[in-house]
Image 1 (cartoon, rainbow, N blue to C red):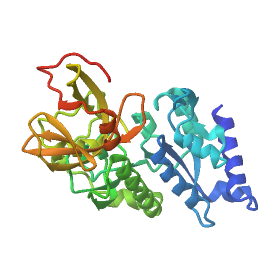
Image 2: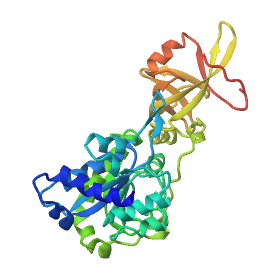
Image 3: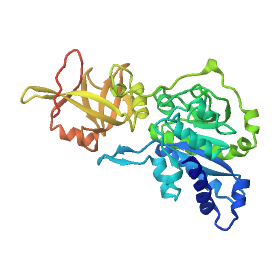
Length: 369
């Protein structure tokens, strides 16, 4: 299997990159790289690599792509390839050269990788731990695009945790991969200011991977000639911080906190897992009090203008009283199984019912209205 894949790799790449060139030029000049990535943001990096590798004077070629196995997604729950795999297929990349191991330490996968004889491996949100056996294969090592200013925010959710903390500056780092998580020497980095123009985590994530792809292409010559290894700077362990994976139960908002803390959380958790809240819906005509859960989609920070537990609608927002005499202005919400709607449309749907903040010590039932 490994030897046949090795042969097909050169046949496919020779045909795709330069039909008029001789096969000997492909074998002798271009260094084989293997790209590892899975989500949509990774396609930005893969696209940059494809474009650079097709240049007449390119020193490398994308020899193979490693990505997460197909999974059930979307409403139909159909088995679908990862966004990176689908992007590569749409670009005409051979399916034989798209590898989808469950784990990067599988013997069969490592045997195939060795047969490809990669000079370098490049990771961008691959989503799998790389064991030592993997890291020992590429001659020039493995480099990773990490969306933070390392050693800050090492881990699975650097962009989300940075926004949650309300940072004013972040960036993207290009670093060599070692066994310790995101702890390898940094080759280069770019800094960016974080302001309200970057409204949510998906926006910042896309920006950082776009800039990370440019950083990678700029630094590739030094990586391929070995000089990047000499100039790469060790990380200062005393300044390292962690960015652990987000747990679903972190999605709930507590309105005892100040509004800016909740606003940052809404920005950070946009997309997945989102942010959730419970409110009490009081029907004064019937005397019923029900508990309603929904997702909070977009917000801004305001000043508290209502009673301690009363939720009102002002202009275009639902005003949730918060700690420190602040208010979270909620602009969009989403009820379970429904589409996202504006705060105004949600308020009209309440048909005059009163809304109050939910208090765990007072309310125990859960009834959707």
